[in-house]
Image 1 (cartoon, rainbow, N blue to C red):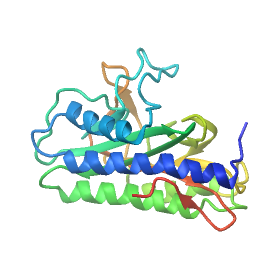
Image 2: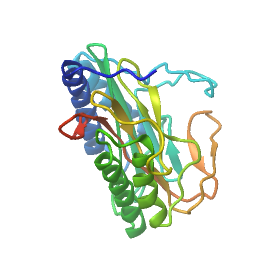
Image 3: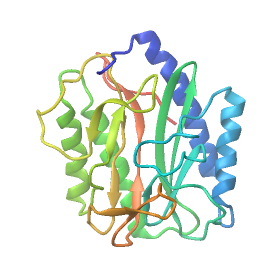
Length: 255
């Protein structure tokens, strides 16, 4: 069931979203050659503590997961697409890093992700990241009252496929509100004019993921969480929590 949020609730979700934005900004700023993924997670934890917020990631255990998620920040490096578990790995020059973070504040949740390169970037990585960001922007622009979920999916998929990239099969965005994952699902590829009609008060986490090698297949790492590309190529991820309003899409996790 899809819950339509009131304008007051959307304002409250914006406050949660701004905690997310601050944490992602701080984690990206801290990411440098020699810094461990666990250190990035601690930076994000510090932002939560300062804001009096909690993490919807920490302890989360969906049906596919062998164990509860042990961190507040997902950090996916190079061929990892999403759900990377922070560990003692220390970042190296040229690593492509995707960070995904959520915060719960006042009973409302925000969720966002971004990708960047540590140190000296490869042109191919910059193009991959830029495509993920363009796909996210296209999805947001399609998130208007009267459109359908398929319009968002089509906008994202057109950008990703047009660049020659793969789209991880079965993964996409979702509704968000009191819980991190709510109805409806938001695919990263689809047909326009199909699916649920968008209404004022719907809030969606829109999140394109792109695979440089062009394939859609992936596998889980031994930790059971981190999803990696089957061909070993690099991946990028971009995400915002977006409210659909009569005056247009409102990005609640804007940085």
